[in-house]
Image (cartoon, rainbow, N blue to C red; front, side):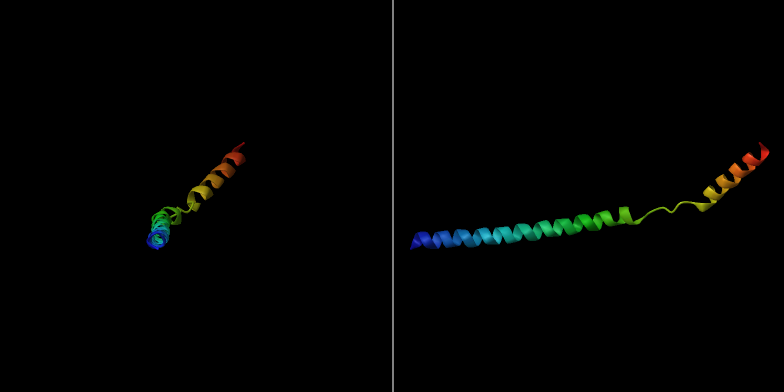
Amino acid sequence: MIAMLHFATLVIATMFAVAAAAAFNWLLLQATFRMMRPAAAKRIPARTALVRGTTELARAFAAQR
């Protein structure tokens, strides 16, 4: 009877440890995503003035030839 009690205690402790490990893993995953979000969200838009200036320069150069 005592062996069954020890086994039940071991099973319950193992289930508690698995639940705690899963919760800790989920928290670390959420923290990772929150830390990664600013790096991926800040995208520098292309400067259109540079693109337009390059296009105008190419047209001017082509007109002289």
